[in-house]
Image (cartoon, rainbow, N blue to C red; front, side, top):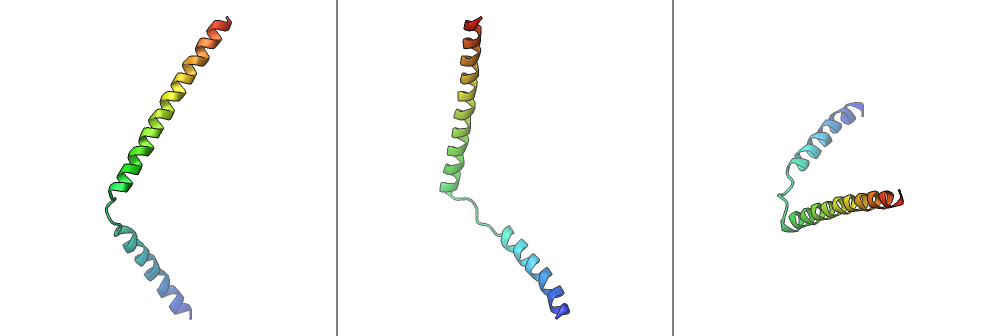
Length: 63
């Protein structure tokens, strides 16, 4: 029983590596999704910059 366990684990690990390496190329929907994610991140960064500028202007107006 011990011999079977010790020989099956490397086979499972090797199979997992082979399956992970055989992923299909990303399709058009995945590329579109990544583009949407990148665009949303850029919008979020710009909104944060605008918010910082507004906060700075409000602090300057208080002085």
